[in-house]
Amino acid sequence: MAQQDERAARAPLSRERVLRTAVDLADEQGLDAVSMRRLAERLGVVPMALYKHVANKDQLLDGMVDLVVAGIAPPPKDAGWKDALRACVLAAREAMLRHPWARRVLEAQAAPTPVLLAYTDATIAVLLRGGLSVDLVHHAMHALGSGAFGFSQELHQPGPGPAPAPSPSVAAQLAAAFPHVVAVATSRPHDAGSVVGAGCDDRFEFEFGLDLLLDGVERLHAAGWSSSADAG
Image (cartoon, rainbow, N blue to C red; front, side, top):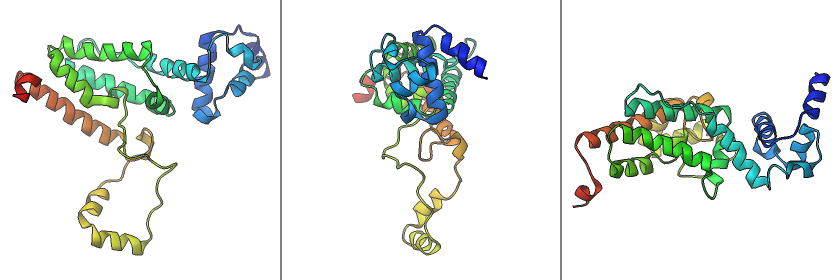
């Protein structure tokens, strides 16, 4: 192990090596553990050496998430647009599960990088090759939103962890006061192992929403829908 560390320390420093090491660090210890100092220590260099490859922390984070996005499996070429898009989105979700910190970086970016734009462009191409109009694709992409990258944005800001379960007496009061909410909320346990981020965005819920959206887009496409006709 010591010999491997020594060989790694002697390996030439490059932008790709810096980014891949930063991704490994974030995967192991979380995004907050990634700093220029910590990264330099792992690479066996002085912090200033990193600035030859990344100008600042924001550029480092952009490069890290670019690596994640670049690793998303492309959609199958022999599938229809609906199946291809579904496979593409679920492949993105697998990437988010492997790198749970990436969602936070994506949501904080001020502007998309060329890598993110290329991914979005390829996603749009799937729909256009399927014969959907540019008008319908425009609105479908808006509806898909962050789902194109494999996660759903919550309407609320989640806390640092799951909320504690209420005491039996409080649970009974809630059930009496809000029976319908409680009945729906407790109807199915969520799979914590497939949640991207916090909240209840597990794989089942994500696929349920994705399929509803794709079915709706398919129906509109078959009907020859356009936004101008709908507005009229």
